[in-house]
Length: 282
Image 1 (cartoon, rainbow, N blue to C red):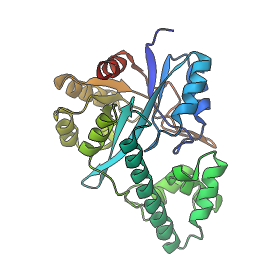
Image 2 (image 1 turned 90 degrees about the vertical axis):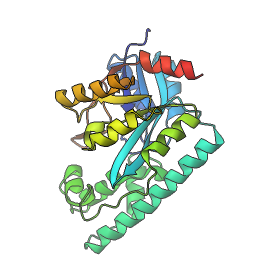
Image 3 (image 1 turned 180 degrees about the vertical axis):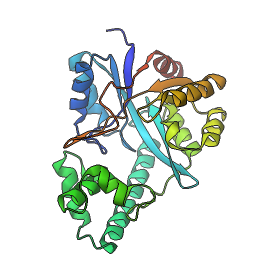
Image 4 (image 1 turned 120 degrees about the horizontal axis):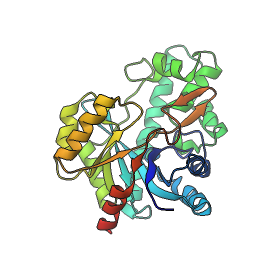
């Protein structure tokens, strides 16, 4: 199968997705796509399983990640593709990211308890296990599941709106590296760094600075959160600085009737420029 259309942004139970890595590969094949990138938050734990299933299906699975960074209190995410998962320094850095996420989860539970909500971190861990996720991948969606189960929220979206979204009383910022540092981590692990969903940040000055810094390889111009005008604006920025353009669904799956972002294949990109860039770095 010649690689053409690909979903270059998908999550699995290795982080905060609902479907296993193998299931995401199967969904991609069923959508008629040629490739998918597994881009879980701050981990590559789901890549190997997805690659195995992809080989069985004749589907190209790209190893990826979505690294968490921040600037001025704003979450900035950098997608990485093709990193060497066995690189010792890369593995150490990802462990550091995981430790920061654990501290954040503990703080959010404490804040929810202070609001009078009777819940524990152990209950959130069990919610993650019930969803097929490893405890190390515990995140806000799992906390939200506990809030819904206890009747403190009507739905996952309601839990985020009332308690867990940025600015909400249960929210805690994750101690994060700067976006430039995330880019360097990916490069030093042999990967290709791409700025994720720039339209979510509301800071095009940051987008332009990173795009013109000489280290970023691409911009995710096609994303469910972007309208047509935003896609055109970020495509123009990418063209101005000679960056590749990528796109993806940011698939997380369904929790009950709720779908986070969009279905696999709802947003895609031509994978050829990314594959060419990866080949040039080898």
